[in-house]
Image 1: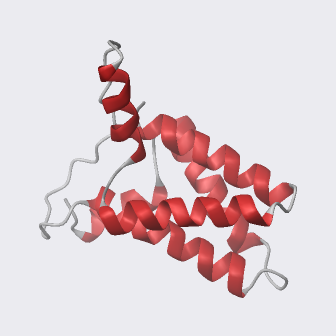
Image 2 (image 1 turned 45 degrees about the horizontal axis):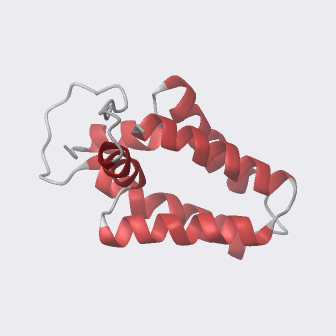
Image 3 (image 1 turned 90 degrees about the horizontal axis):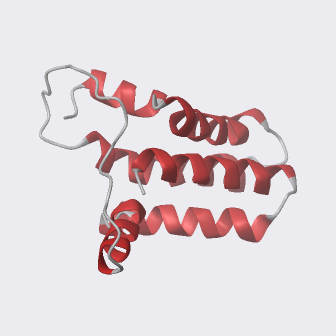
Amino acid sequence: MTDRTCRLILGVLLLTFLYFDFNRGIRALIVMLVFEGVTNLQVPRMVNAMCSLGGRGTCDQDLAPLRATSRLRFDSQRGFRPLAPMMLVLNYVLFRENLWLPTWFPGFSILGAGVGSVCPALTMMKRAGFS
C-alpha cells in the first residue's frame, strides 16, 4: 500500500462519514491520524510489512515530489500527520454546526491527494522549507 492509496481510502472514508453524519467513524479516523502523528508509525508501511510477511512484494511509491531546496531538516510527511487531525478536530468538533465548508475541505483535499498525487498541504509545507 502506498501513501497515495492510503490517502485515497482516508479521503473516501472521511467524505462518506461526513455525508452520512457518522460521528464515531470520524472520531476513529481522527484517533488514527493522531496516533500516526504522535508515533510516526505509518499505516501504509505497516500494511507493507504485513504483506511482505505473507510473501507479497511491497510498493514504495509516494506523492509526486516537489523539487525544492529544504531549509528545515523536518520531513513534510511527518508534519502532515499531526496537521490533518488538528484541522479535523478544529473544524469538525469545534465549528461543526456553524461551518460546513472547512470540515469538508480536508476531506476533498486528502481525496485529491489520493487521486491526483498532489496534496495542497504538503505542497505548502515543502514551499515553506520542509524537506
